[in-house]
Amino acid sequence: MDSFELNKIIAAVLLVALLIIGIGKLSNIIFYVEKPKTPGYVVEVENVVASNVVSTAEASVEKIDIGTLMAMGDLATGEKVFKKCAACHSIVKGGKNNIGPALYNVVGRKVGAINDYKYSNALSEYGKEWTFEELNGYLIKPAKWIKGTKMAFAGLRKEKDRASVIKYLNQNSDNPLPLP
Image 1 (cartoon, one colour):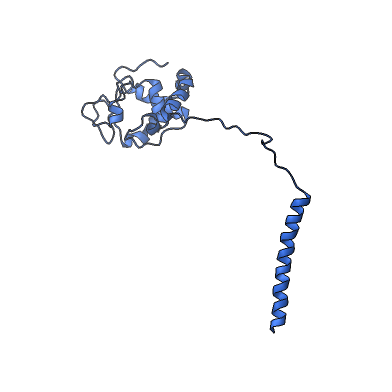
Image 2 (cartoon, helix red, strand yellow):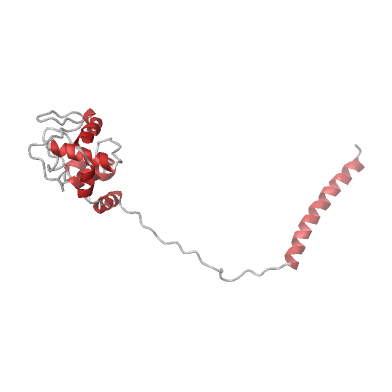
């Protein structure tokens, strides 16, 4: 290929580039659109403040009628589901602490009240009692209910399972509390 052929190819490429740029500029002049000074509509974004997970968990549990929830549970299912807990907790009277504290007489007891068990600071300072409502919230997801707990249990999602385990825990007591 000689230099004349090469010059024709380069000229053709440049001509096409100039035509594209020229047509673009010409169309902007012919079809000129003036931009508005203010936009046609404004999208307003509401500022949402993230709330504490514990308070939302407590709020969702407050909406649950604990009496209705407890009516869903039964002791046989509670004993069956508690086998997940038995890997770390003892439920027998006079049972020793394992990885987790012994849970005999837990319903109605102050949170973090067993003297010979080393609780996490979060549980030691919690200051509430294990009521039906408190146990229900805690069993949904312990790490979300009490931030800083060292209990690494995923939780019980099914309401019937939670109610059954709470009934089973309540039954394993010297003085079971009356169900709500």
